Length: 243
Image (cartoon, rainbow, N blue to C red; front, side, top):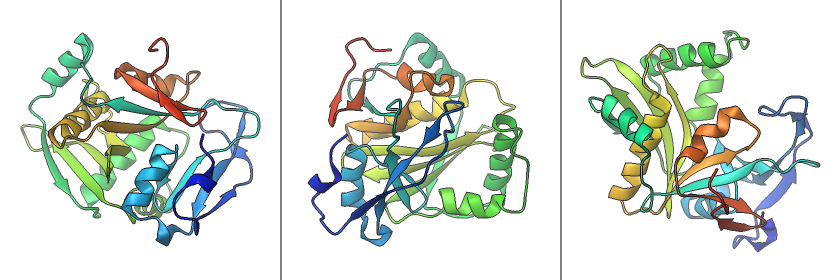
């Protein structure tokens, strides 16, 4: 990772959070390095922060900064060079009836209900409480950069997927995607394929997919989009052997 002092805007400050339980590797503690103040982080600066390994959660711009672990590696996919695998081509064809509608960030009851179903399926122990609406708004519907919300519906008009993505000077950043857990057909993979196609059409070179952890099964899907690059020691490069 590069040093924050190398960033062009010297008025930004960086602080390290206290330790908290890692979401991906059991029994490990994590820390984050956070960029502040948030009102200074516009689209151009955020694009550089992403290139330096940062990511956004609502107004919170951060990157992993753990004491004894360096497993989280920023990952991006080359939109121009990407060639879908046989499995990815099947997934794309299977969901070819899906239609996309791109909007700005907005509250929608139908979106939130889908988010609830997705969370209950993927995180069954989390429960449903009164704070979920607040968390949803803060996490996905709050942004100071150029962000789009995309809803995908099938031929019958049923909502299947919602994706939130940031528009960067050199690509798109996939913020979060949630989908109907009852629908077969790898909807999450399909959404990434769609975003890669948007990069190609807009002549944007990169799709940023956040962090990849070799030990985490939840992250395996990211390395299936090839060729990809990882950010290590401040340099983006393709692994010697694509995982």
